[in-house]
Length: 114
Image (cartoon, rainbow, N blue to C red; front, side, top):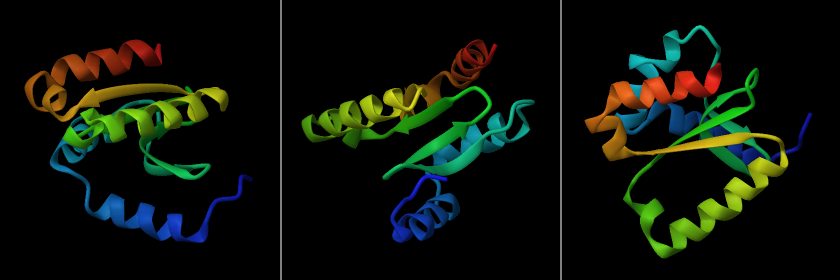
């Protein structure tokens, strides 16, 4: 089992209770009923990912506006490199993707699961 800082467990729990509306929509509208199991706000190393499928080694991130600023882009690159080193694939969708083309996001996720 991988070690992680104790505060991350409580923070992940809080994030699950307070998901963004886009995370809630993807979770309750698709991932929670997906035939392949996903976890919400999963701790991986020193990171908490939005959604994680252990079986397929797949991470799904829903990105708000802060991810498109210089600091967010740099942090995401570092995070994605770490997750990639762990053998995980990261799919990123913007809040706008989830809001405007929800079915397309779900289809894209399904394509990566098969």
